[in-house]
Amino acid sequence: MAQPKHKASKQRKRQRLGQVKAEIAAIGVCPNCGAPVQSHRACGSCGTYHGRQVMTVAAEATEAAE
Ligand SMILES: [Zn+2]
Image (cartoon, rainbow, N blue to C red; front, side, top):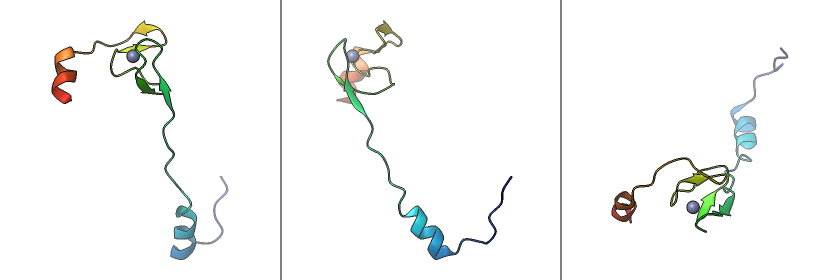
């Protein structure tokens, strides 16, 4: 595998890593309940993903969290 010819200095490394930024998560709307849900994740309020139930959401737990 190709290797770097020279050590990257602290300045050069920090300049490069200074360009690395966090991306904002893609937010969609749950087709089942209409709540905002992160893409490619099961809905937190109704527990469905891609039209089927994938997890159970306890009503008491959601009320206690809010
Ligand atoms: Zn939902």
